[in-house]
Image (cartoon, rainbow, N blue to C red; front, top):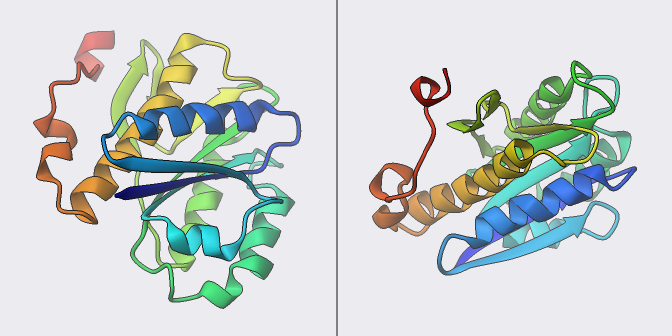
Length: 188
């Protein structure tokens, strides 16, 4: 069984909405159990349980939120070396476009890499101008269909990679499936 944890902090509910969409995307991969947990309710045991982890944070001055950073500094420090090699990705929302969401995703990646997680981005387009190269990003709530799709693609891709690399399910490689995917040529 593929085990995916979507861990999030959400000050306004926007990142929580994104987390639910990421979870929906992960659940599209057969034989995948998905848990969606707020950072205040999550524990190190949740992170140790999962094969793949999606971390969502509000953008806080271009980086992850203090609550998410505190979780890794305090809750996860005893799990050092216990989560090494797990697969992870990031997502973030800010109050406006240009608010630093991609930087916040990169700051989440930095924390995850320090714990030994293997982080990834998504090359697939979710719409005409929407990619998830650094993670799924939104301006406020994920209202637009392209942003919702970007969140779902991120979750699906996380579940695909863990199914492939953790469980040896070659049929779950993104290139082995008959899912319509947008490329840069499709959106020009």
